[in-house]
Length: 159
Image 1 (cartoon, rainbow, N blue to C red):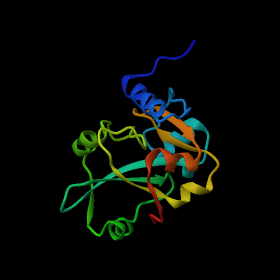
Image 2: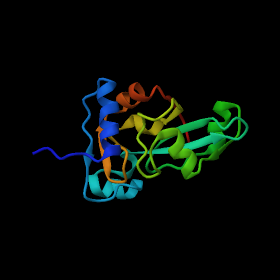
Image 3: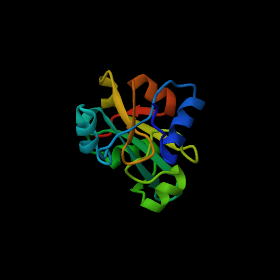
C-alpha cells in the first residue's frame, strides 16, 4: 500500500509531476533536517545531499537560493561576485514567505515564487543526489543534470 504524503511533501511531489518529472518523494522515519542526518537516514555520502540555502540581497531583498553539496560551506563572497550585490542569510520568516517551506525541508524547486538559483559545481560529480522534499524527513533522489533542468540554476563554485 502506498504511503500518503504529508501536505508539504505532497506539494513537492505535485510540483515535480507538474514539471514532468518521474521523481518520487519519500518520507522517512528518521530526520533529514541536516545534511548529516539525511546522509545517515538514506545511506549515502554527506556530499550527495543537496542543501537548499536561502539568502537575500542586502539592498533589494531579492531571494537567492544556493544548492550546495552537503559537505561544503558557501563562500558568500563568491555569490556576491556573481550577483554584483552583497547578500545575507535569510531568516526563517523570509524563507517561508518566498519558498512556502520551513528551513530543514526546503526543496530545490516548487517554491511560492521564482528564485534565482546557484548550484554547487561539486554536486555535478555524483551519479545520484538527494534533495529535501518539503518536510524535515521527506526526500527525493535525482541525477545532477536533472537538478539543473528542474531549477534552471547556474552551476558555479561556491567555496
